[in-house]
Image (tube, rainbow over all chains, first blue to last red; front, side, top):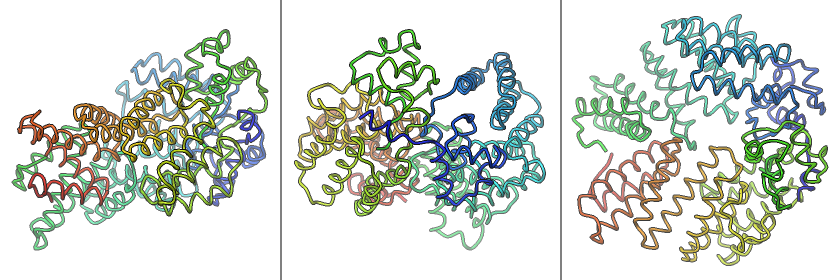
Length: 319
Length: 311
């Protein structure tokens, strides 16, 4: 049996080429910001001497989880991997000095090894800055520098349309977005948000976009609500809820129902359309959100809903 | 077929030679490292990998680079197959299966997947009996665990495929009303899952699924207290990992078993409030997860047994 598997052994390049062609993605779009087209050609042709993080990033851009594709690592890849894990651990433990030292080491170790490494370094520095309680603007700049490693056009006018982005890359952009909103830099945030929404819409058929979309719907729903764009906010909530169907996980979904309930209230309360059935719909959304928050231990959010239902709906019979 | 990986290969080779992790790893890497490699938590360096394979007498170059994409063309279809099965859409499952079989290879693992998938679809579509289904499943599991039935699986690191087969075997016994046997198999599989090489999220989902079935079988055997304990264990995992798909079932099983204990006079009437709370939670979470069947069922249940109307 073991022998069987070895004979069937495939090359990761074949997988990249297969998925790329299945999704009709050109070589130049897939590797933009990561490696040259000729390097990607060599990878697809079976060249083995390629940095493991570059391979992982390419797979991730195709929506694949890198650990589905196990690699045997060269000494360099192995050390780099161990160092990344160690940095994450130090940051988790809030060991600022330890993390800083390792990040500097990692930076030196991976100079000229490719943009994904640089990106990892910059993201880690941003996390470190946050741990130290540094200036939020510096934090945003570090994250922008991080995303520009593999998406250089982000710097010019936040242009991401020409890329296929990995979940890691999208999450960096969402981090920037959330930090911009938190700082009240709404004009820039608005631009980034629209870029992201446009990107997600155009890539909606890719499986990994679904999970990201729900997170974005929560951010966008709140943002639009803040700017009184009620219909726009409602639309994105509904899309998020639709996308959520079939998911196993409960993250973000409580927030999504919560926002939708508030939006419906804002739109219809004190109008002639605030009918019994509409009121019921709102109440049900609140109760769904409440149950999720309550179950997942997000007690302050649950408490808010509880109070709101008592005051506005005279609803005592909460679950 | 499917999800065998580097760690699987090292582990299965080691098991087939009956050597321990300590023996294999000596002077190559630490036991902890080997264990992490076998369970997929860490990729091995090339040196370590080659030394391990060499110690076990395997040709090392052949498995170089990447090992789990031999089937990448059907990997996505296999996921679609499992999803169809889980949503009881057996017609769709059969259609997907036909496409998979066209492209499938001929290894033992391919055969294992095929036997299970074909018999599962045939059973669910009423073409074969429970006993025939059981026979096929046992044939499938013995392809990779030849002594299945005679050895304990408690410490056996199950693959995704093996875990699926064992769950099916347990369900088949339960459908023959042999709950005791069904429970024994699941208890063993639960222990084995902790050893297995699966990504954490998939393993948690499996565990919750097993606990849900266990609580059902224990409840049907009349062992309500045990059933309640098991649901609580499942609910705890759901909470920690924010898994929602089996949660309404677990909450319902919890309430159902509590209610039995109340009706038997073991628990006082006061506990009815807990039952109501659990079922209401189950109802609203079903709505949130967009399970119309669960929503309908729980709504009727609340109205019929507790005289409560929910929105």
